[in-house]
Structure formats: C-alpha cells, structure tokens
Amino acid sequence: MLIPLLLLLAGFVVLILGGELLVRGAVRVAEKAGMSELLIGLTIVGFGTSAPELVASVEAALAGSPGIAWGNIVGSNLANSLLILGAASLILPVVVPRGPLWRDGGLALVATVILWLVASTTGITVAIGSAFLIVLLAYLAYAYRAEQTQPAGATALHEKAEALEVTDTHLHDVQPLWRSILLLVLGIVLIVMGGRWLVEGAIDLARLVGMSEAVIGLTVIAIGTSLPELVTSVIAAYKGASAVALGNVLGSNIFNLLLIGGVTAVIAPGTIPGEITNFGLPVLIAASVMLLIFAATGRKITRWEGGILLIVYLILLVYNVVMV
Image (cartoon, rainbow, N blue to C red):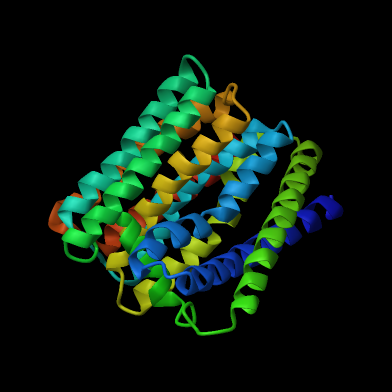
C-alpha cells in the first residue's frame, strides 16, 4: 500500500506545482503578446487554474477509469461549494452580489442537472461533451463583453481571476520571455506527469483497500485537486476580500462542469458509474440549491451558514468512505 500512497502524494504535489507554473508562465507570455488583462483573467487564468482537475480527469478517462474521471469533477464541485466556501465564510462572511449569483450560480446548477439527466438516461456522448464546450465558449464571450460594459466583478470568471490576483502578488512580475516560455512548458510537463502518477496511484489504492474508483474520485482525488482553490479562497478571506471567494467557487464549478466534463465526454464517452449518477450528482444538485439559498438570504453567507456547509461536507465525506 505504501507505493500507491507515495505515487498518489507525488502526483498531487507535481500536479499542483505544474498548475502554478503553467498559470505564471502563460500569464506572462500572454502579457508580452499584447493580450489585455481582462482577456487574460477570463481565459488564461480560468483554464490554467482548472488544469490539475482537467488533466486528472482526462488521464483517468484514457486509463479506462470513468469513476475517477467523473468522481473528480463532481467531487471537486462538492468540495468547492461546501468545503471551500464554508471555510472562507467562517473566516469572514461572504458578501454576495445578487445578479452574478443567479446568473453564474444558475448556469452551474443547470449544467449539473443536465449532466445528471443524461447520465441517468442516454449516457455521456460526444454530442453532449461538444455542447458543454460550446456553452463554455459562449459564456466566455458573454463574460468578456459584460466585463467591458459593466462594473468590475460582473461575472464569476472575473472574481475567479481576481481571487488569484489577491493571493498571488508576483503573478505579473516582469521577466524575460524565454523564462516565461520555460515556465509554461515546464508547467505542462509537470501537470501531465503528475496527473498520470495521481491516477495510477488512485487506481492501485482503490484495488488494495477495496474502495470503488468512483468513491476515490469523489473524495481523495477531488480534495487534492481542489487544494489550490481552497488556499486561494482562504487567503482572500484573510485579506478581507471574501467577496471574491464566491466568484472563485462559481467560476471553478462552471469550468469543472463545462470544460473538464466536456473534454472528458468527448475523449471517453460512455456511462457514469452508479455511485456518481445515483448519489454524487443528486447530492451536488442539493448542495448547489442550498448554496444559492444561503447566498441569496441577506446577500451574504454568514459564519453559521458557512459552518453548516462544512458540517454537511464532513458528513458526506464520512458517508462516502464508510457506506458507499
């Protein structure tokens, strides 16, 4: 059991490190290429911070482990909505802008419901994956237009980028182009390597402990790949910028469902394991509704509501490990 655990841990470390290098290198290359800060925030930062989850799910899908692939997507969104937002709210109540809440939170909820419906009926097809990717591109175009014509913070993707700006003061440091490209390439190499190690370790660990790959994906993999978002949201809350925590979570949820879910479906269409279709997705829908209700009441998520989110996540974690 020691070797799979070490492989799993090494995969997490290398994957997260690669994701950070990828974002830093890509942002600086994009700046030197003349891209606007707004476009960089909506695209490079959004795609880059979702890279660990994307690679982990794609590697799992290619390895013939849909439980890990889809468990990572659903589990990451559960961790975002309950664990990360709950922790940030305990540190500092999260102020909620009503417009972006219903639009961005509603998009994530609708995408989750659609994923559950197709998983329960036709199964995941290339057409569904392509539709998810098209919706993401349309949303990115809308977000770019909205941020140009409306006040800052008009979309969750802006807040997701803003959260990274708040917590990473060296993101835009000036350095030679060759060094930025080197960081970008090194980040890609590390992400691919880390994702492969992570999936291999998770598959071996599931076999050794007798736990299904879906549960491993919903819990261990999801928490590990969500660590960057957890750190970002917690630091933002400590710095008094808790308002960006909700946008960070909603933006991550949208990318997880539309980008990672879309790519995974296109690469490896098929059925989603029953543990995810019958348990994970319905729970995620309920958690999303609860989050929207908490955020809409009083236009903020209070500390006691954040505590409820954390307690619910811990209960789900124990249930997944012991019962599922």
